[in-house]
Length: 530
Image (cartoon, rainbow, N blue to C red; front, side, top):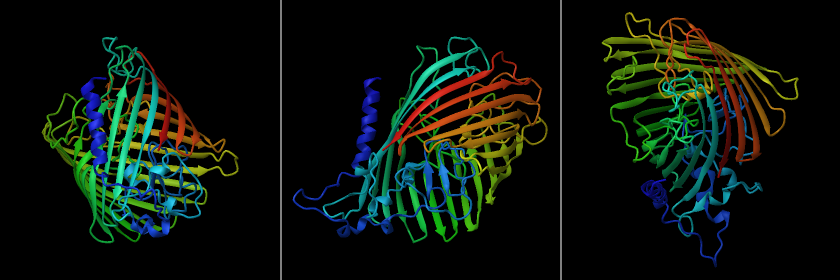
């Protein structure tokens, strides 16, 4: 790695530590008991509604239909809590959330807690000799992931190898380090900084790294929170966004670089109601320079939740997305202003589970000289098979997102900023646009540490036009038969904060895809949080 890249990363790390430069432990001659440091009590914590409250995960979780709370990350049950939350077991294992600024180490204040996890000694450190300046946490994550990709594009040897479903094969390694510091000054003010270093090998010059593979030292989060009232907090600065089950807004943890924004967010929480309002600009990753917000791409809106119904949850939202950048050859890729309204309901009745989400999208496609009128919808019905020792859960889903037929208003749904990898196939060949897909999801837990997932999709295009891919757009004809995909994941928990994940996916081409090669994807991932 070039020397300037290394200097850039360590400069980012140094900047993260500046906000905690006043941290001093008590004199070696003097000990401070928990009873003497009220800044360590849970009532000194800020409140973070909607996206930030009780979000856990960061690793891929393999239990669906869980009504115990919102487990967000790459997991199939991310945000799938319904109604009132139950108490969480094993707080050490659940302390790291889908966004690290929502991490919860309050269990360390419990006199009855006798456990110990990697990194706990770096949490709730007093700032000032007696903690008069609050507490600070240090932590992070190290993740390694190996990919073997066949027919997934990004190949520099084959003349058409950048496209999907061509005769290509790549082997490469992704590495990622995240470091953060969280300084809670008091119950009104906190500062948070999180940096990232992400790299990818290139398979001896054969693999063309994706735009989400490399970032040689930058900030994912750099913000200040100010609690204005007991129910209202304002956040200003660079910040990741995460809402619901991440179908429309996500930090995209699967990506090596993750996803972040820059702007302001107001968070309000009163009883069973919580509403966030935000105005931000997207921050695209730049591997070799400090990332800067793209002020031509504004993302704004309001996201609310209601938790007052037993065994039922409700999310409702408005999301606006303005992209003033010039469009590429792909229709709907630039110079537009879009508005999305959404509603999500999910819940359970005994061992039956259900979920539905969808809404209209409207606006203007200025580059095309057309109005925009689209829609998306998802409906799912699940069943917990409680009589089996492996605790299997079976779901049937139907996903729909409108496409453009070339007449009247533009009809292709824009998927906004989702955790696209989690839905519609782990091979990432399908965006949530111009697609219909009945799919079956089965999860089970053979042992305490081992979880399994099986997900099968049948894909059809909603219109005869092309279905957009997540990079490496393949050649297509007028058929509506896209193909089928099978995803298999096995996850093993090494310890409370470390796991290994093995995945295999296969995509059978339908008549619509004209490339010569089906796609295969094998990956092995190790993650540890600290």
